[in-house]
Length: 419
Image 1: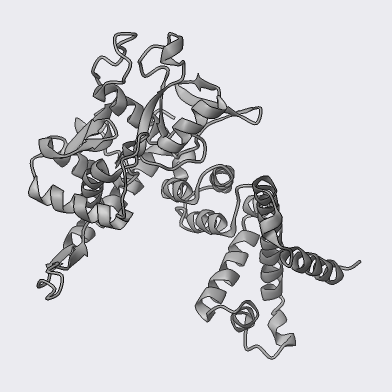
Image 2 (image 1 turned 90 degrees about the vertical axis):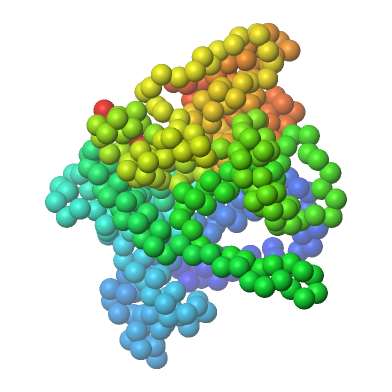
């Protein structure tokens, strides 16, 4: 059977499968078939990109009535010319990146991630050698298969760190400084008149990412899910956030805010000690993953609304053994700096949505410390307890035994300066 015949046969099979009454499938069958279809979609996407690249090279549109390949793709895919042009451009970039092309059909990959990697490759400094470019492509392609798209995008901004960490620091910090200055100039706030019927006052605006993270930390202190969830009544999450915002405005002193997953409503920012001393200009990051320039970090070090978590610096005593069951605020901050949110593989919940879990149960003599403590969101905290997921620590990083394999949450973390 030729390729066209095989594809047509596959289309008929999928059409027959789609015509079934899916409500008759069990949850396990639904999960299994969904995963299988995702695998088919990756294979189809890899073939599509290869076909597009070669069709564009040979100007295959000339065998049709389309003006160009962009018009041909737009018509056949039912998308705009802009979207079609993006697909053709992505296909060309993937064709020029052999490691990305070979990995496109593998689990964890997608055309979205391929776009992130190939875009980063296109933006690499022109003076890199062919070997250095190959190392960067290999590093990003491997990361793409285990990181979320958001985490991969963060890593891609420092793509050259695998060959030159110091240069990656300088490039990132320069870009962040420009972005922060631009965001401050473009920030705005407006407030309207009360609505005649409800009396509610509309308002809105735009602010820089760091300020948004400060506000987000406070709002989540009032709305983040808890293991023992409070009655929600008829309130939606948006309405609860609105109520929380009103309370924040009325109680500006930090001490009046709610409890932020065990830590007072304060934005935690991770910063290298050498940066605070002015010895280097390495960017830091907020607990929500927003990068912050070195200059901005030094300004914020004494801000009451910011709590710097200094790496390589002197810390508070963090091991209280069996003295108490619940982790202290200092311990939770240390866990947040290490785990950066829920540590369960694949989860992206921030620290404020998490609870400190004893890898060695307290009831079985487990200590309350950071060496055996781990942050888990409410859902995964329950799941780990109910299923009995084993946890171990490799170089202080928590790993979970899932389906017979030890895996960890592959959040992006910048390489150390000494790398």
